[in-house]
Image 1 (cartoon, rainbow, N blue to C red):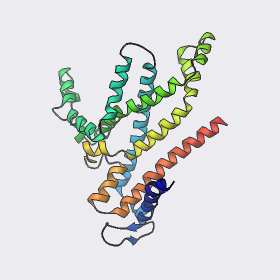
Image 2: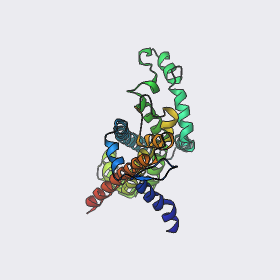
Image 3: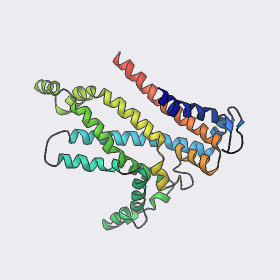
Length: 272
């Protein structure tokens, strides 16, 4: 408890108190009340970052969970090379997000493998400067993040599938239920605990994403790939506005807690 208070709760409360001040990290902090939060809503870059975080949360969560679950179901059977496939899919999680971002930055380069492959198959019209295109850059970075995350989600669901009672599925098959009905009516309800863990992990990872965006675009072009985390970093360590950055961190914390509490409350009502 002492460790948690010192390393988790005290910094969190300190961030909350800093969000009510104007402070550059050197001179004494000047109390400003809720002015930082009022300034946030009038800040167009903050609004862009907030809307990007919503897009990121929906895209990152939906794609990584859907692909990860599909891979877990497909690889939850003994067979040749299954272990090799699992290891290969999980391998990107071993690599740091910065390295992942740099690799994908090379992939998206104008003369990189993606544009090269499009040229080889005669789709030159689809070639783009992916990370410099204001409408495509965020989704290009999102694909790289999902590529890394699916292995982690797959492992979580594989652990859950191993704990499912196979006799229930066999009994449903005897009663005439097809594979699709067995999966949705028998397997999915047994994965409720895993769903909760996956949801919490996905929401937290989506809201604190920083490394891969910073390595690939640094929030550009024209702030079109700014997330709350990258904008917070810029305000804190580039502009030296630590009070304003702390206000952004409070917003990130509130969003994460809000999503998780709503989900857990809904799960509790369903169980009742």
